[in-house]
Image 1 (cartoon, rainbow, N blue to C red):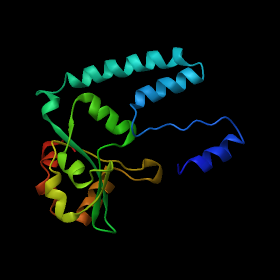
Image 2: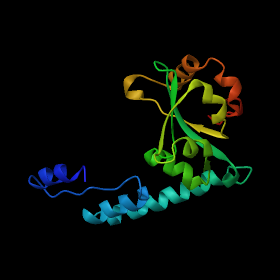
Image 3: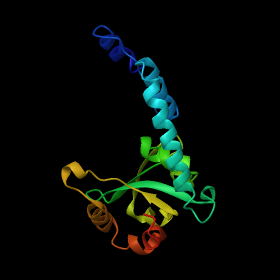
Image 4: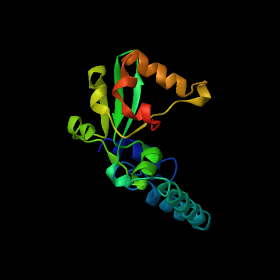
Length: 169
């Protein structure tokens, strides 16, 4: 409903499609877009390549990945919080496709959303087998900046997250 006015305005300019990207599999959306633009012949080999690479990565796991947990989180040092998410586009799509399971606390804390912000006191509760985070290299950021952000949120985070010690951050 909120998008109805915007959609009407956009349709006056050009053909318009709204894609429900939160409730549909990303690869199915990409396949639809490829169909719309007559590029399915380009998409299908790329999908096959993705599936092959996924199988290669799965083969590197020494235990069943479906028994392992993950959390996407990003520090917000200015507010002393971390953003946690169960969905973060293509990034979490890959993690789900590997078979990793989202850390239950995210859905428990944010049952009607894909995530939200938690205070520094919750970092120990976010002790997943794998932690996924992001940075913007186009801004000159790197992994060290992510770690520094977590340092500013909670200086003890490295001791409370085994993924850091295990090299799975």
